[in-house]
Image (cartoon, rainbow, N blue to C red; front, top):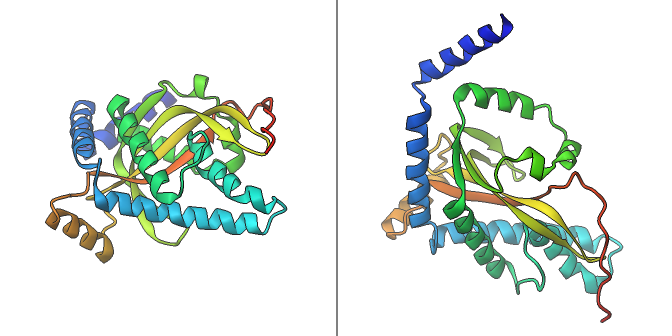
Length: 253
């Protein structure tokens, strides 16, 4: 009886919104194709991602400058903490610009090869409710080979999720892309299975501050319109339930 009741509630939610899997899938594929057309070489997307990377590297350097890590190792450690976790192997790039170019290539690769998935409004509501109970430590239980159904995927939500980012700004997340990677760390050198996760904003979503509308207008005027799915951030998650790994000794300097 309980199951039947839940099913009726889910049907009501989806019927009220007019959502159907077939229409949602067609729209997701259409917007994915448009993103693949507009993302590579887009100067506005690159500038936004470059700013994100520059800010992140600055934060990491600030933390490491207050740590006990030797001065000579801090730069390598900062790259490992960001890019190594995302799947980039040393040698590290010269700076944030090269890191951004690598990230864009990774995103394009994932979008080209990914299985495209959609999620119903009812299931989305259930997932959001469950996600609100997660703690950071829960991520360490991720077993990518058993918990994730495909090594490369792209899921589009039925509606954007409005979030407050670390800087206090508001954005909306409408899609997630992922692919299996090998994460690379230093001090000591080690590798382990991971998942590279990219979040995407909705170009035409509910969050439309004046600055964003200006960027969208400038991009169109420049004949380089923003893609419907705008990359917002790339992250690296360890995917082996944080099992201990055998460290490979670093080469002597």
